[in-house]
Amino acid sequence: MRFMTSYGRAEYQEYYAKGYWRAETFPEALRASVRTAPDRTALVHAERRLSHAELFAQVRRAAAGLESLGVGPGSVVSLQLPNSIELVVAVLAVWELGAVYNPLNPGYRRHEVAAIAGAAKPVVLICPHDFAGFDYPTMIEEALGEALAGAANETSLVAVGGAPGPGWHGFDELLALGENQLAQGWRGPAAWDADAVFLIGATSGTTGTPKLYMHSTNSQLQEARMLNWELGFSGEDVFLAVAPLTHRGAMMYGLFTALAAGATLVLADAFVPAEVLRLFESEGVTAFMAIPTLALDLLAEFERQPRDVRRLRRAMLSGAPVTDALIERFTKTWPDCVPVSGYGLSETGYCTFLRPGDPRGKLTTSGRLAPGIELRLRMQDGGDAAPGEVGEIMLRGWMVCAGYFDNQQATAQTIDDQGWFATGDLGVQDADGYLQPVGRLKHMIIRGGLNIFAEELEHLLLQHPAIMAAVVIGMPDERLGERACACLVSNPGESFAIADARQFFQELGVAKYKWPEFIIPFDGFPLNSVGKLDRRAIAKTAHTLLARKQEEGS
Image 1 (tube, one colour):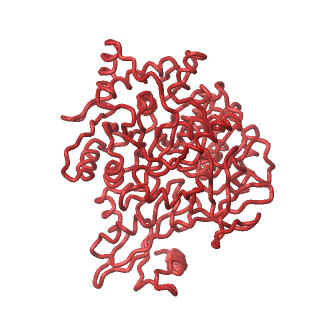
Image 2 (tube, rainbow, N blue to C red; image 1 turned 30 degrees about the vertical axis):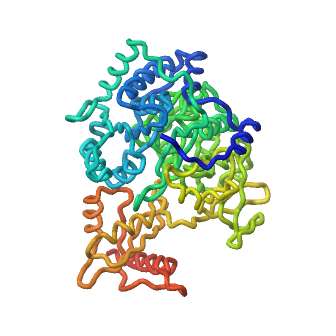
Image 3 (cartoon, rainbow, N blue to C red; image 1 turned 180 degrees about the vertical axis):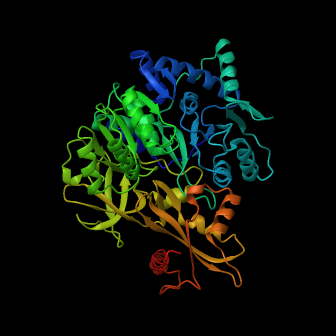
């Protein structure tokens, strides 16, 4: 498959000449770890452990098996798996073949999977046979049927835990196919292209064709090497992945950094504070990533039941604002662990971040620019904001994605002809260069570190016969940051309550974290001076009505 990217020849030459990019790939990084530390633990999940040599052997078997299912350079492979050894093995096997990894969050349901699969057109899709009591194979079959709209399904289906029925392969069967190929002398690719697209992931709502960002190995592997250098990581470190590795942030500050350093990666099934602290102690974890609310939960659990966390030295706090109160509590409880945070999108990587040694007064910011990355804060008139002034965050450089897969229009709307990426976020930079994001141009709700796109929910709500008009806003929440609130104008004689919303979104197969948690009825929506919905006035009214409702205890 050919990928149209936004990179130009001059940019390639500049990135290589300045040392930001190099002809190196993840398959080569794994081989380097096998050569230098074959017996070092590479991967830990529950009671299972793999050394670098054992991981490499598993990856080779899986790669040979995937090739027998038609995967080759440029093929897209979609993986909807929880944190597990199988997920890591599958991801690395995809890259071993020069193919493209398309992550699907385990929380996605039919609605999201159908939209993404319809755009990515995977050659293979791998999911669990069963996870957390949910029947993934049935949902996948329904989603692919919806995405293909009657066309022949050419996607090979693989389930971890055994084939659920006809037309499916079990993951063990895939490994057995690979073992047979290896016994017959299979060698795999002789070389890999660091400039090729190797990762496409969904980054926006799925009301139509979703936007799938494209990254090359260079933009991601070299970001991991840069973070390792700046934050002082080495092969002796132990990273803990709590968030799903289908999330780019968790991929970077966990899987990618561990692979680049030849370090150990420990996988947690879910965020359970007592279990995370147990892993800190038993595995000697040195680094982890969490959203601030989860960090508070960890601190509270530690104060209740202390553990030996003396090896812990770096915590990436990401996905929501970091407060002074959190920093104060964190540094008091774990004085040897440096809290850092950063700013970036799935499309841009961590373009700014804090470093060890940054002043205490800067620890609630998102830090300073990464080497080789440019930032400007664009004012409404197109000019640049001065220090202390708010503007739209614009980024340019070697970590920025190669555009959106099969969507030149979205690429052109986001990345201008000078290479500047428009984030849609607002920020302010102080005189020392520290960035502080302050808001969003886009109507996005962040619930517990997960993005909810208001326009997507509005589009879905308008499909219900009772609803005439819908505006979705974020309601502040002390624990999760925000919760989705649907402001609705009903059709005459109709009503729509929170129970109706739950049933409707469940029937649509929408991920549960996106479901509206408040319903505010309106007789009609106010318009602004140009005849458009006045979202600010709607939000103000909704906040007032909800506060009154909560005071009344209804």
